Image (cartoon, rainbow, N blue to C red):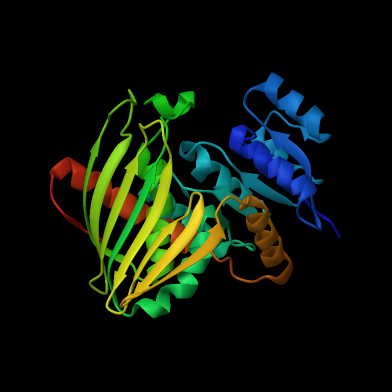
Length: 322
């Protein structure tokens, strides 16, 4: 039986879910989409041959929709995700899980009682370079330092430049990627964080942040997002007692150094990850298996985000109670 999905928030990123859900995941199709801009939504629905519904509640209640993808700005995630869980339908929720830590805590409680646990779209976990780094991780011995950085062009999205529409800047909107990667790769949780942030070009929220965190096993983590440059980069560096690893997870490639030996791995990072995310979501729905990234992960990441903002405000390191 084909799993029919509806996409709420079919903007630039949401359309990717529509496209991949229609063409790239066996056993899945898209039957409806919702977008605030009615003219754009109707045009997109006609283009892909699906139904346009102007109201999110109508899409969630639609009998021809078996599961829902929520791909809207994070300020709306808590209400929309809660409505999907209350309707008893499977949910794929784009990162960040919510806009605030308090909302994340409430949503995690709702998720615990829902028939289908939410599946969080932390898509970088499906990046082939990240998967290879995780495979090589045991060769590094005990790791004492992890560095993660993303450097991106200024946002072109109006809502990310409007303080009335966005509840955060680069810490919340992009930092969640690298915070989650640090947890995913190390298998540890953050115990403290010291973060600083600045507005370089964005008139409303921070578009640069630099944080130094400590994990519960003593490993130090450096996190950086620079969203003001006309070039792109995304890299990982790991220093362990038995070796060092460097990886480019934007274009591809890894370098492993152990003693005087250097080994290079060419793994492309350019393949689309959303078909893999949708495939694994469908597999979890069919089998009832626990999602690889769920509400607990979203809550843990929002704890770090919240601590980053508090640290930047006070100018001090903030403890994180896991």
